[in-house]
Length: 189
Ligand code: GRF
Image 1 (cartoon, rainbow, N blue to C red):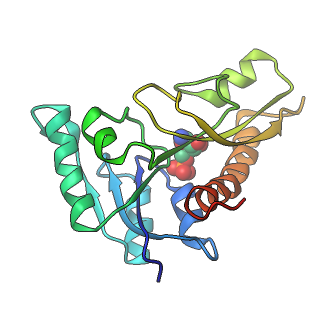
Image 2: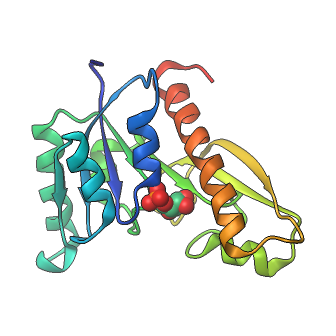
């Protein structure tokens, strides 16, 4: 058991969450899942691992601030020090940034600053570029704008479809996120 505890925030399939769970020698425990979609497959993945999963739906709170305060309460109860966003489809607000600024990471499926925001893989395919990639960065108040920690290039092949490119990008993401977590927590690559 590590002493450092991390929470993953996710909204969807959870392949990056699963990669963190499966990683050997991760320098922190993935101790909590925060999800904003009650039917997201990532919740089953957490339950199978015995990791507590909490669903917070923003529309059930009177403000974003109240929503984030409810999340902060769980983070505090689980002694969470780091937050890893993995397909969490929301902007992090001032409440979370104030307490966790510099300790929130995000993964994005492009070489930022190229193709920020939604459908980065589709944007790359449409652009006709011969390469795209994956970025892990610190989170700030913007959309995919925080300081970059690590990037990995993924070629776009002439034969690529959205499915084949997405598969190779996900594969790169899973390795890069683990490297970046090791780097920020232990200072190694
Ligand atoms: C990943 O492509 C990530 O870069 C993006 O959302 C996707 C999440 O995939 N932010 P998964 O839920 O981890 O499988």
